[in-house]
Image (cartoon, rainbow, N blue to C red):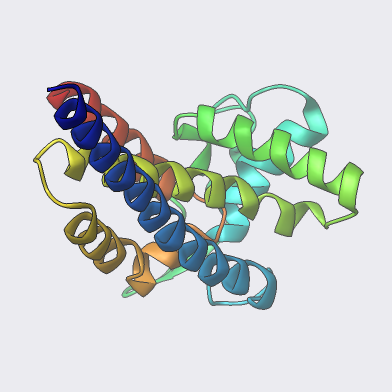
Length: 194
């Protein structure tokens, strides 16, 4: 009886180790893909069209002013900017200051820390917060699939087929709210189902 229990315990430990290795493999490939995007896509370009506004209206504002932006006060310049519309030039009708600020506080902390410690420009360093949210998304998606009694191999394939989609890599590589929303959603689903 003791041998059987010991054998079952060892099999379970081997599966747990394989599961961790599978998650690490998926994570490593995801991180490499994101780092490529983060470090090769120029900040001042059109690859991430609204990144500059997300950064300037929120992350840069927090870094420069050491406080959260106040909608209707600190975003007046964004309402005055003209944008192209089907009917010609029109004023902007919304501001990026209205988004929940937790994500941008984390981005500001990460950006300032990486800038001070490694000399990475603030604009690029703020992208690393999105990478952190992406890592959280990958981990909780993998854990969430584990709740359905799926083998580690199947979990790895499903997780990889979701997180290696260029769109997911894209949103985990630039300053915005999108990957934060996915990470929080995966945590909530995991917590709800557990």
